[in-house]
Image: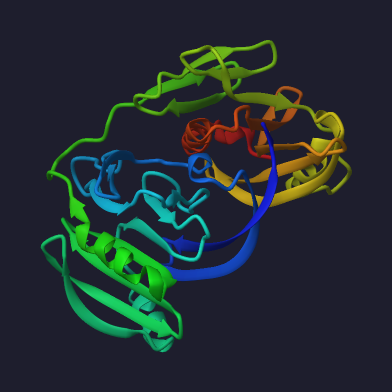
Length: 336
């Protein structure tokens, strides 16, 4: 996929579920085509009165996890690359990136997470959201504020974290107050699983996406209903140097497989199938931007890298690309 370069401020909330810790950082991040239509929109949507209802029914498992809905301003855009991925976590922000809200399902909350917020001088109180009393932490820093609440529902916790400027506080408050759980016991939408035994991989196609997966001469192509390529999976053979790490491979392989690749403009870890892969975007000598591409550790026959590449820059295709990435499974025996 070719994209144009532009910088925006991004506020990323990283949820470390295994330890229950909470961390966030503000930084300028290079992304593609910064418009509302070119960000991921992962939830189903219904629009009314300047606000739009986002519904995450895919989270429901009929037992411990329950889907939810929330109303947010229709001009807000979805935040890509949230960890953990869909449907466990999802978030939106203003187009300028200064205000955001992120919802995360947590199996449990480590008491250390609460202690961390208290040590950072967050004010703690009890509030009622979605008909239930929850822990509410808030902090004001001049023109900016942070609000984080935890809801205990059917034995699981749901964290809603909001960060922003005071001018957007009313909209954020309206969004948080609109949060609702879906009907208890609602089961997740069915997905279509594609398995390729020859390549020792499998992944799920998003429900209702009308995507199809077809074997290609070198791997698998994922096509939309118009037979346009949305993404591709390709095994690669890369000549390694003694002691070279997979991180080093991921930084170099683009120069071999992308025509005119001249500069790596984005490089970050990306968890795939329990392994650390790397998400990259390359700039070519002609000024085009190729990506996102995810390289995954892989050992199958003569291959040692599995490449998942976005082939279409439209927002719906990007949404589908990341959903596929988050369901990709590689045979554990193929670990690098």
